[in-house]
Amino acid sequence: MLALALVVAPGAGAKTIKVDWREQKPLADGGALKFRITKVVATTTQWSITGTIENASGSPVGIDRDGRDVPPFKLPHPIWFNGMALIESHRLYSANIAGRHVEWWQHPATTFRPALPRTLGAHRSWTGTFGGKSKLRKGQSFSIGFGLFELQSPESGGATVFWITDHSFTL
Image (cartoon, one colour):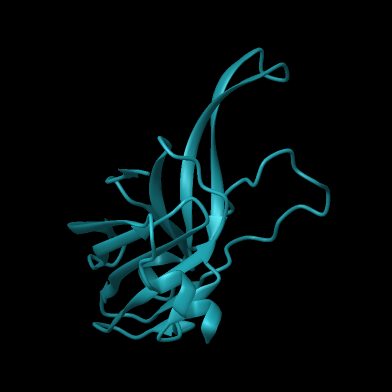
């Protein structure tokens, strides 16, 4: 519980940003996943996001907060695999493709208050705070990555979707 308090409570040097970001991901059944962020708190060692995830569809939606399995080999950077995380975009050169590409690096969420449900029922929402500890660079721009959502409507065919905020903030 103490670790959660450290992530959520703004401390000395914390950047607290009150926002009203409202975004949505349309779904195959005509509904949508809606995201609202109201507060961002970040330092160079920890971060937290306060907001709401709403299932504005007629079918339940599974939530995989950790995202896809990470490969069994060591990666040079903490690549985002669609879990709930603070994300930063990096444009890198790759000899494999003889050009530049974008990689999303993650700072995973490790605390959720209240607990994030595994399933969000039809027309239900979760409101809370999530965050983590991570080494964050000043001057870097960050977006919020929301986990994998496993659609359970017949129209979706069992598809999974994720969301990265269109909005961002700079530490």
